[in-house]
Amino acid sequence: MAYEYKDYLGSAGVIKERIKGFKPEILMVMGSGLGFMADYVENPKYVGYKSIPNFKVSTAPGHRGRLVFGELYGKKVMLMQGRFHTYEGYSIADVAYPVRVAKLLGVKTMIVTNAAGAVNTSFNPGDIMLITDHMKFFFDSPLTGPNIEEFGDRFPDMSRVYDRDYQEVVRKAAIELGIELREGVYMFFPGPQFETPAEVMAARILGADAVGMSTVPEAIAAGQCGIRTIGLTLCSNMAAGVLGRPLSGEEVNEAAEAAAPKFSSLVAEILKRI
Image (cartoon, rainbow, N blue to C red; front, side, top):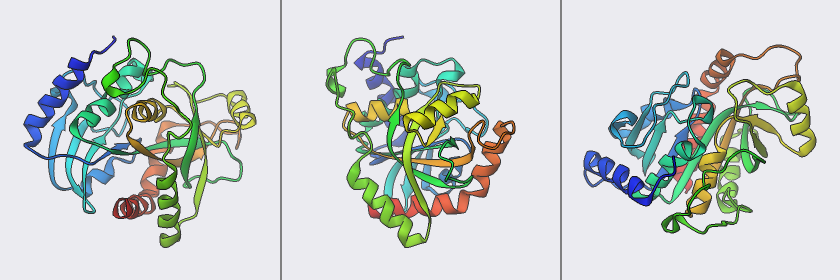
């Protein structure tokens, strides 16, 4: 469905009633196996997706399906403990819906994370990649349909979706922690099937470093409405065809759990610096 501005206002209004004057600064979108960051939020207030008009239900494994509001390393955050995907049967506008609601709540920055397959053969499972750009090509845009001018231009510029000043913050945070930070381009595939070896080969030729099924819809919506974005990918596995063995969803979650200490320390350091 095509949402109207009043729909977003209605969702934001319900959330405001639940969080009683709390004004988040940073939206954190947690990908597969990365929802553990919510455990560190101080004085948390929880709002289940089912209680918010027009929010969908998160069905992906490991996604709790709720918003967590509170303080995290000195910053006021709105953390999505679970996100939506087009492969769940939702439109790309559904997937990006929470970002626009976050804008109405006062959010100015987004940290969006995902677990994805590494296409770059110099990467290793467990690596963290700073997203410098993305590719989506022909799949629908969350901006399709009548433009809502309150969120931005009809034809927004996408050349700096991932904030360059914040990229430098992430680099310095990684150096401080002694974390080897990869950098690269994330390519969106709708899923839910993993990409084929041929698709992975094509992605590599086109310049992608990792492939996954999320992040890009949220980043596009954030780009239009002026939310500064940091994108982080946990390379949970090598993409199809790289190692010549089958992939599984369990592998993704296991890799995310193993990388939890490194990943959480990096996010913490980023929050302290932005």
